[in-house]
Image 1 (spheres, each protein chain N blue to C red):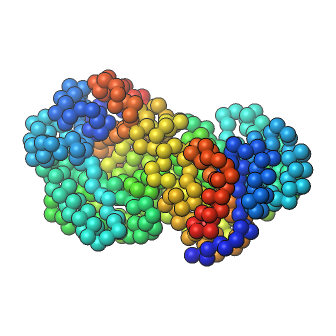
Image 2: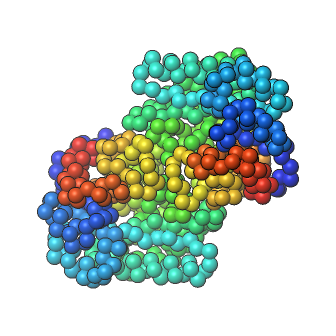
Image 3: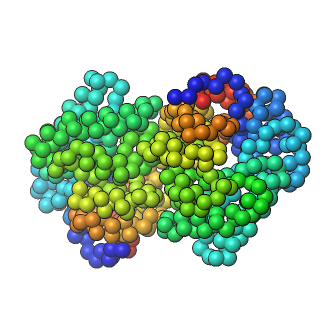
Length: 274
Length: 274
């Protein structure tokens, strides 16, 4: 079990957690709250463009932890698969432009495509974009998603699968993202975290609400659910990960809150439950 | 890949699939539709009692495939765990009374209880009731539930876990239930089905809708989703299972249909997608 965190040095918040805020507003509010890290979702800089977003982020002094998200490799035609790869190369360039050292991959799935085929296409897609990532000096991480997203979001559903893909592809630019929301139930989680070791490129936290009212946008604040977040953080740290801990919460409920109040709640929950 | 089914000899319907029907009505409608098998949920005979239900089922000529459901072993106190075991012994007696050779176990979980602890309590609970099952000549099957139910319904979330428990407990009265809804995403499904072999005591089908609008009651009719049902049936049959194929669909949508129309839809989908 990890010890409680007593300051905010490792705290990073995803712009999707405070979805109603523009990037500018998020920068202002995170800075004001003493949050040092930010993970930027693409639609938050779509309007201003990556170059401009990069300037503002650099001026802010915030640490850009990662860009969310690339991926979505499987498709039913070769042309679409090539388009997805080109899109991912552009996303890698955007990451470089905003100063993000990492692109998180939500690997994709196509309803009705056999999962074994989707998984093959994911490995091929990542292999195809890895040279571009290496040239841009931007890392990529495979984020296994909860099995409830295996239909249309991600055919990589366990850390074991992600680790296997990393082993297959053998690149210093490729690792995994461990998100407690997606992995907490997995009986092999502890051993697969140990196996991932220094290939853990990022670590996401939130909580699993009971009941969960929506498959997508009902994640809980840390402490509002049943995940042993600190226990999992302990495993990740034993494996060697000492980087930022990223708060990524999709919640129709919290998005209706005053976002400054939400940020203060994150800080309180951070000290008690992360 | 299994061949298409050309008749209804292996068709079994769960009374929960036609939840608005009473047990009497279900017996009438299934018989009328030429459905030979029925799996009975407990609340469908709560009012009349298991003895009376058993008489009516026997008179109907329907094959009682299983009773749903026992389980829910983990609890925070020893007294509650003992109550759960007593309850399971009563359920085994009910199965014997209605002529069901099998009780399906939804093993339980307690939000906030570490999953490793819940899993230990599940093994201990099953071990405690197995002698009663053997004496009653009623089999028990562990049904791994989808990871989205790991918080409060079932801490057994992969077929591998269920197989491990069966290996640990070593009883001819204990096996597994494979439900495509819970397991379809699992990268180890094919190999674990092969490993389960003749310990596959039952096989459930329905489909995974995209989008899934509710975690509990939005299962799809076979063919209305993305699960390769026939492919999985092929694996189960290669492993040696030749028994009934049980249609278990929880759906707020279908429960609003005319239930006779629902049964006819099940029969049509059966020939095409199972």
